[in-house]
Length: 476
Image 1 (tube, one colour):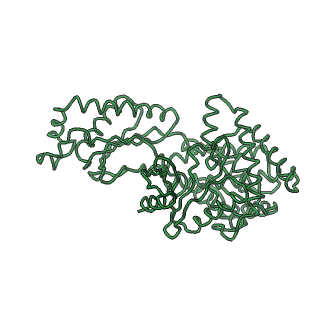
Image 2 (tube, rainbow, N blue to C red):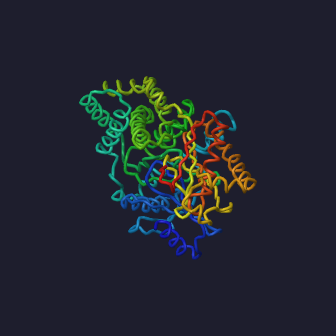
Image 3 (cartoon, rainbow, N blue to C red):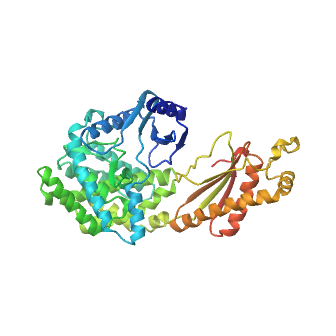
């Protein structure tokens, strides 16, 4: 239904029918994204059940564009049915670009620092120029990053990280410290636009220029928070001396536009760093501990390292004894270090029916390999095999009579997937999905999945191989 709504919307907007629509991997939200094309033009289709969030994103996109900010154009909307169509900015995020440049240069290159400076220049424009265009009545769920917003973030950290990670604390004393921290944060000027999730995965690089996405949670707030989000973005892992340079660059640019005391800004900045880290850790706990999406746990060591750096080198001028104890317990937790260690790679080899479509990876990793077995000899056309599967001896004997063709197909599939398995294991990935599909999901796909799994298990002794047959009732 969603795909049909989006393809119809695409056709009406561009005057040409959409010829292909593909769902993109999910990130940290429940929104679903699709890339649509007619062979000449592409667009991104979005589905989200939250009407208020959709209205905020669509309106903010137009308002930020009016302020000269590089954000995706909104092509068409049908908010009554939870969908809209926006400009496709490609696949290169600032995070992906930074990872590539660091891998090529074996360090943090000057080119990357220059890109971050441009991003911070744009951030000043977003906060000040964009802030004058934003209709704050559309902010969801609050128009301001006020005390209630802060307490929501701090409770998110408490319930979804501290409790799930089994970190001990005194509830009342922790709540008292939350109030004290909020009091201190609320002393900062909060009259501009707070982007809310200003981090490297929400910044796209198009023709060398940064473009911005995922600001639907924006509201009025202190500028410190967005700078903290960018510079202490966990897996971006910016070297601390580069952070210091970038923070000074930002305060210089902000001072050119509005009256601030740079020293006071930088002193108060680290309190915003800590609330941002705690908010992010709440998300890692919810997605990782609660939803069992292991890749979110990989950000924990970076977040803990950032937390330790701040509490060791930038002490806050407020008394927070219980929070300080909690932060120390987190940074010294052997259990957390074990939890965050990369789990052995699990390769799920599945058979499926094309009548139901490609299986979706429930781990959140996305991607993987899908192989179409429908060109192979089909025992399902013969009545004697109809009630059997690719695991039964008569069907196995049938495929043995076509050994050359079956062997070539399975060998090529295993060669291709072996490249991914090797790289995934090296990079600490937790999951890889490999699918074999045929018409009914009973014979060719089952046989190929079983044969491929055996070969991969023989080749990769340290890898966990799981075989599931979706048409036989197995679940991913």
